[in-house]
Image (cartoon, rainbow over all chains, first blue to last red; front, side, top):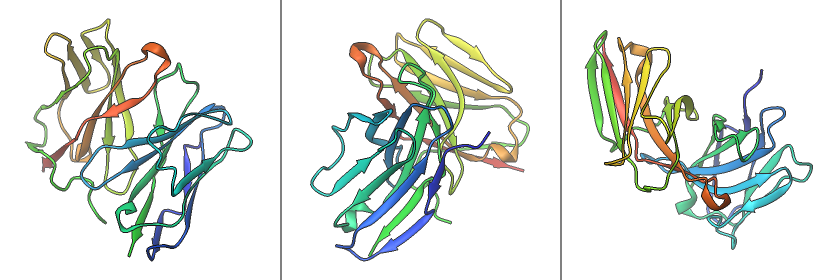
Length: 114
Length: 114
């Protein structure tokens, strides 16, 4: 069974530019999460989706970050405009439902903002 | 590639010895705990989980111990192998009131000496 797929794996942009990350969760998983992981730290939740509904986006910086999961499967996380402090690894995870707590992570997208 | 283990507590063990990685969690109401392994350049990988109604759970070469009195979690790895070298994160979840947010600890870097 394929795991969580993310692309691109690496992205280097200049500050103030937009950037987008894509995630395809494990087939059949209704819950999708976006995390940000800074160097040397654990992942921090940005947003959680139940199917196509964003049910927890309290940690998402809404002035520059946006996310969507239009058909309840794939998801896109966007930053516009990017700032130097946005450099991090952006991880996507999925689980079968919000009541199945085991989350499976993708490989992440390493973003570098210059 | 860039390591996720910079500035993290480090545990060095000889190949074949047993490893014990400790974690102090923050929320006394947390009822579900997970250990993840993260290798450089990869996303966190599920190792083992435990619910708060248990104090011990065993997997293949790994054992998780939970002490709710002092809010302490540990991961024991038997006969540590070079492939076990990674950063290990504990994560806690409180599922009360419909919240399913996973909170990660700071991580411990395990280095296995051949």
